Length: 489
Image (cartoon, rainbow, N blue to C red; front, side, top):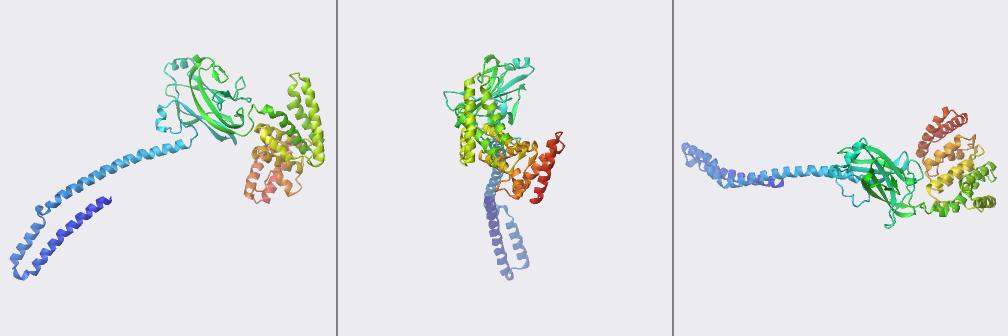
């Protein structure tokens, strides 16, 4: 544009020079008016006007005009080309931003372009996402189902259905690929390997043209064999409906259509499943000691709490070997845990039991699932006498934080305990706050948000068919209402 303006300015100045020359000529005529009669003057004017529009006088500028016209046409064409180039660029940038939203550490896939997805075979990636307030690993897919033409003959025989199956393998040691364990339905196969399966319709042209979740696993179930930096490979296989797998691999290749895989880099801080056995005995001992600490939180032993601990020992440890008919190990455990209870009680009386050291060891030697199991025992101990004391409540809250548990989940667990007991100590303001697990650094706004959640939670239970729960819910609704007034909610 600057160039065009410059050219226009040149023309203007050039025309100004011509006009100036003409003006000078007219001035000359004016100064010599006395020398010419009217006829000569008219003839002079006529002559000058004709000269002014004489094309021959503009001849030097015709070539310049042609050049300017050509430049303008060229610039217009260039402008249109830039506009055409800008539009695809914007579209490409928009598509790239969509890709960036799903970026992950897979070097093979980080440069995918969504414009090519329609021609791409099926690909997957794994991302951590929050689902129903809990962390999950989502297996997402994009691209066409990679079936060959001959595959559709087999697929048609099974009503256009195929089976999608996913397994996870620890491939940190390249020479030793290990399938991850799965102990929880529906995230395991018949051999207790972490797995999930689903049947899907498949026709020519079917696929996913944006990232779509096809499987998900609770984060707590994706446990490698060892702690630390691990490489986990997720493999999705498409097969005939009745295809069988062994150690995560298909048994009969005739049942196989295609597979796709993706890597997940995992920094796993808990013990791996092959390390859990090594620490199991120590972890169980620490859990029992924590349980007894809750039973002694009021500086006197809660005998019903001790009975709850003994029941836990029997279920988790003693009876574990019952069906193995290992009576020798069973008797050894009975003696071991009987001594542990007595010794821990003495340590508590003499204020020599270090709860911080116990928690520190649990955090290092147990996985998250085991720590929630420990907290469940502590809540059972606290509620074993149908009463939740302020001392018990404070210790529970403190321990939950030290064990690095999700506090919302812990509060839900505590709510279940409170719903089934008769008495809650709520005699002073401090006790009221501990019931809802208010931390010292919480603002009034955060407390109000939590109280609204608790009010809603308890209000639902005021119509419970269980009279005990119904009565407790009414008490808790009243307590939340009072605290909401206190904090101007």
